[in-house]
Amino acid sequence: MSQWMHNNPLESCLAALYNPVELGAHLLPRVVAALADVNVDLYELQRSAWANPLIHLRGVFDIHDLPETPTAFIPVPDAATTVAARASAVVCLAALNSDTISYGSENDGHLFVNLVVLPGDGDFADKSRSNMRGHTDGVSFPVRGQPHEFDQRVAPSPDFVCLSGLRNPNSTATTVMPLSAVLQKLTNEEIEELTKPQYILRPQKTFKLGLRKLLGKDSPLLEVMVGIQLLFETEDGYWIRYSHSAADTDFDSELASQAIIRLEQACQECSASVVIAPGDILLVNNRVGLHGRGIVGGEAGGDSRWLLRTYGLDTRELRADQRYPDSAFKLYP
Image (cartoon, rainbow, N blue to C red):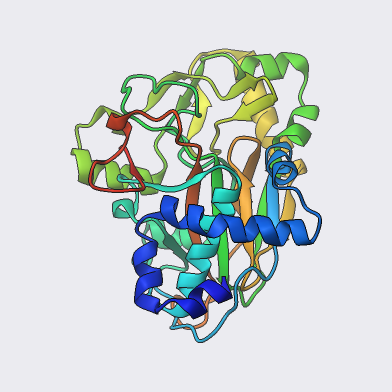
């Protein structure tokens, strides 16, 4: 990454981020060669990414002079370090057969967003400081391979959540809960209940705000979704679609209620902590891992905690109407 940035003006590197598929294809051969130098096979790395809920890469990009931590989700300041962080995320996702993508209904479709402490006392500001329990991102969108419940244009939720560390002065932990470990704490009956379409999901707040702005307050995509399946059995094991703040049971069923309560308890019992240091990248598999966060300290701005977040998705089976025609990375809605 340092060599690529050294050989290209900052403006050219910034422009390359607008087509992350081309950028990933351009940088990937160098990554494959670097892996081969240390006897790491790319295919084995990809297998590991689907067998484990996370990959923690340390010291991936260099930290140089940074501006003050932003006080909003968007935009990401255009500094050399943020460009290196973003390009590193793109090539990491490309190595996992994933395109770097965004959704038009979240943060105006920006490819990268700042995860920072927000100023003020509103819901978003409070949430930016508080701890977060186990969830998957884009929970109101289907898992890959499944159609949306009532709008076929809705693209799948991401396969991977990619977090790049810029600042973390208090060593705030990101928590990851391996689905395999969570399910080991549930009975077969509880697991079976979670595979039934009998739960409720609500759009997560960042998507809810964007959906209202993009499609209007009467959009059916803003409504509570009923009859939803949370757990999916695949050829390689189970996938999960869940958020502690957006899920509930749809039926007056003791078994269904017990299953979701036990799922939440098991997530807390199986939580592992990862500290994302400046220069690190954490890739969380959004199908086989749930993630959360500890309480974030400090005030907004200044030298407070600052991560960049983007998403990765295998887009090979997407239809044209699930993409925005004027963007190389933005998906519907």
